[in-house]
Image (tube, rainbow, N blue to C red):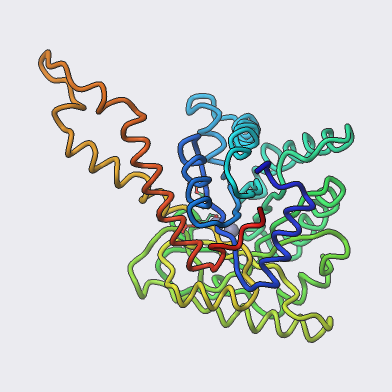
Length: 340
Ligand SMILES: O=C(CO)COP(=O)(O)O
Ligand SMILES: O=C[C@H](O)COP(=O)(O)O
Ligand SMILES: [Zn+2]
Ligand SMILES: [Zn+2]
């Protein structure tokens, strides 16, 4: 199917919210991982979201070139072409963008979409994330407010983060830190400043102990009830049930029960990277060890072209990653819900 138009993306999210399921949002950083994600969604009969991080976009532009806008545009163009041949619908999203990268990632990408929309075309991406978790709450919301206006005018959904997602790259590791749990007051303030959709649609990553990466059990405690509490408090004030469209970061390593509870409380998008990275690489390890003599040319040996051809191990990698995505679709209850 063609990549979701803004209208189709809005419908996808509405269906998820009404049907109490969520879409896996898979981080991709190459044509292989992108194709693997499309295959996974297809095997699950689920629509889904393909997303690219700033680091993924740099990599996709060419690891020595490291141009985020080039990489993100290449990702979107590639996805537009190949997605047509799969029987599922995907939306394209950009992942965490901190303040110091807004001018080299989200803002120039928005400018490209604004030009496209002015010419009567579709935006390049269907949604972008602004990650203001490292700046004070009021500044986070003020930047969100500016970006929301631009996104809404270009028919793009904004994702924001209120609270902090932990993990190696986020500087909150190990401890069960209060910042990892969004407060009701912060949820209230978000609705006050950004409205609840009337000024533009946005998705919210409220945090409930989420961490990026996979840590040993007991390391941090996921408390999906935090989401329920905020939804109920804000919902009561504005007379809306489950007012926020929620995003679950750090999906890897979460239990089926934690995932199910979070979806019950209004999560419509769950990001997965670490587990799908592992699922992609694991079959490659197996291939290399099993075919050790064929993939290595030592001392004038010939090796086996069929075994070192990147397509040979690439197919195994992609099918491993696709299987992990099927599992995610089942846990998120999106399996079997595809529109087309
Ligand atoms: O939240 C994520 C990307 O934004 C992914 O987190 P994991 O790597 O823990 O799955
Ligand atoms: O933010 C978390 C995602 O896993 C992206 O990771 P990355 O920045 O290494 O591409
Ligand atoms: Zn963050
Ligand atoms: Zn994340």
